[in-house]
Image 1 (cartoon, rainbow over the protein chains, first blue to last red):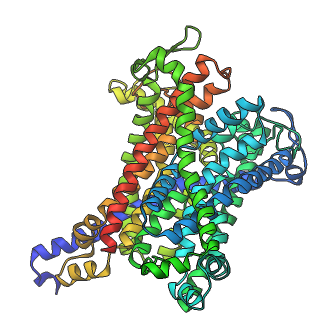
Image 2 (image 1 turned 120 degrees about the vertical axis):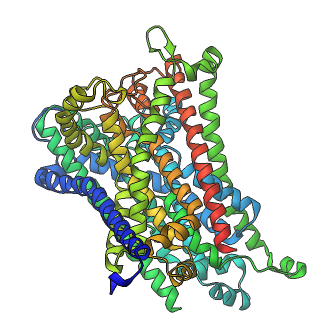
Amino acid sequence: MISTLPPRFRRRKAFDALGRTVAVLAVMLALIPLGAMIFYVLQQGAGSLNLNFFTADALGLGQPGGGYHAMIIGTLLLIGVSSVIGIPIGLLSGIHLAGRGQTRFAQTVRFVTDVVAGTPSIIAGILAFALIVEATGSFSALAGGVALALLMFPTVTRATEAAIAAVPSEIREASLALGASEWKTMLRVILPAAASGVVTAIILGVARVAGETAPLVFTVGYSQFTSTNIFGQIGTMPVQIWDQAQSAYPNDIHQAWAGAFVLFMLILVLNLLARLLTYRLTRRVQNA
Amino acid sequence: MTALSSGVTSLASRPNDGTSEPLKQPSRRPHEQASSRNLGDRIFGAVTGVFAAAIIAVAALIFIVLLVDSLQPLSRFGLGFLSGTSWNVVTLQFGLAPALIGTLYVSFLALLIAAPVGLLIAVFLSETAPRQIRTVLGFVIELLAAVPSIVYGLWALLVLVPLLARFEPTISSHFGGFFLFSGASPTGQGILAAVLILSIMILPTIAAISRDVMIAVPNAQREAMLALGATRWETTWKVIVPYARAGIIGGILLALGRAVGETMAVQMVIGSSQSLNFSLLGLGTTIPATLVNQFAEATPGSLFANVLIEAALVLFILSVIINASARLLVWRVNRKFSA
């Protein structure tokens, strides 16, 4: 049957098959290094984990033993500080943008938000250094938190706006038709309807900064002991992984893998959570 | 599509939003507007507006803070800072050219590898893959775009670099005459390691964004082409890709922005030498790597520290140019979709 078709057509069919194959090969080519990375993090990381890793403070490079307790607490503290600053800015500006549509101001804010979102994270670190470390004369969790907040809020802003925009306009119009004011409609009707999307926005913001390293190098200093003082120096997971990765001692390398494993798992869980919530939101909106 | 970093998320979700802007303010007659604008609404609008305006203020603040600290080296070195090639902390000679050119060189090579592969992955995901593979692979790619760069850097330093150390001397001894392969570093660190890890890191970004803009191409375009007897492959390259080209180029530019600003992974593997070098097997540096390596040694307020802040200013301007172009391109394509 095929043989009766004109040769030009057969050539096109063959080219189509070839193209599809090349695309599949590209996927496989990409999956090799990416898969290898995940494999190493899981294998080396899980193999190096033990209870001590979670409960012990860090020791100096080259000393056997020690763990990431100080770093885990430090990273959680940093996430807390950056959330307190970054989430309100992100939420409120996102709400503003969602309600303003295409005004010149809203478009400008969107544009600037997107450009700030693409700013290299090390710039945020330098800014926090110049503004806070130089002014207070010391490294601190606060300085690191400010740097991370700068990286966090664009994510929250845009995701909040998208979450609110996904709420059907009938819901908003019904509330306004009943005589509710704009702001009450937003707070009592639209935001509850968009709740899972807004939570997703916050999760994505946290996931964006949880593993950031570059902004912390000149801002948080270092502490091998657990500390929750936001005006003092702290140890953090990403910086500790960085330090230990460049060490010559196998014990440090093992801990760096374990740290990368925990960080990877944190990001994985946050992203799965965000995806689950988005899935629920879209289902509900479609059903509404 | 929400699993990506913010820039990607907003970019990816836009084409879909554009078609149905559900919250666009209904136009009201003046008297209605006056009555609905009660005090609560005005306060609410003002408060949220202040936070929105704060974003613009923050962007301005970054620029001003960096510029103020850069004034001292700016007046001393002028534009020669960008073209100078010597970097000596003792004699206070600072030229950014090796780091600036190194940043652009490494990022460009990474893009050269990642863009074609990323685009092909996007074609596979949006046009030819079965539905289940599409969902699973799509999530994996979005997750990979969210993996912290320190994790990529750790893998690159402990796995990729030792691997390269085994091959680089052979490459160098056979092709050393060619400028790209001269002078192998015995450790495996260097430009090639940085290029490879960067291309791996930006690949998910390119693939995810290109996929999203290609999925957003209206089905009528595909059906029309297929009805005319075109194959899937012809449809993809003659209709889908041209239709989505602005979005695809925007995505590639965003990936370039990420590559230019990538700090930890590059710093860990590039070997950090402050001299101009184009050989893939030699050591090099980038602006972010220079900042990480040297900032800790600089006394705040000293000329050295301010030179580094000026380098950060150059990096910031570079990233603003790249990201702004990406956004403008993507907006153009969105307007086309919603029209």
